[in-house]
Amino acid sequence: GNEKIDFLIATYKGADLRPIGKVASGGELSRISLAIRVSSISDSDVPVMIFDEVDVGIGGGVAETIGLLLKSLGQTKDKQVFVITHLPQVAAQSRNHYKVLKSVKNNEAISHIQFLDDDLRVKELARMLGGIEISDKTLAHARELLG
Image (cartoon, rainbow, N blue to C red):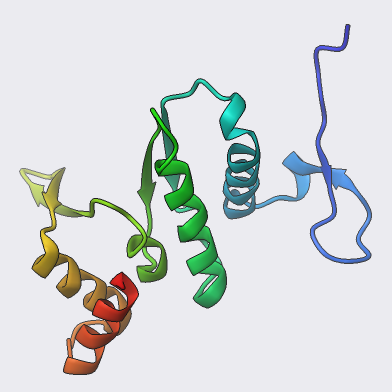
């Protein structure tokens, strides 16, 4: 039997089909992986899925859609989803939110992981939305994203 499969994709309307490994970026590969996972979740016995920056190169409504798809994966029985994201539209869809902080000690990078309670979560989403200066408007927008 066949032991090798090549997936062919067209990355824009009118493009020729080409091998996915030659034309897709890392972000596109992550989104294709997400689409496959969502469409085949009922047949999968993988209990934990990790998506690292599946939202690269997108924003706005597309980011919210990606967040909702990831949320639906996490709501599937016996499935756990970890998502690394820089987009508030994606982060707002999670059940639990952690912030990764990095520091350097003795010329060695150290990562710290902080669980965000409701108040810290609003502040972090506001920071993701608005940058360094957090205003009442960005805080309100963060609360709105959380529903």
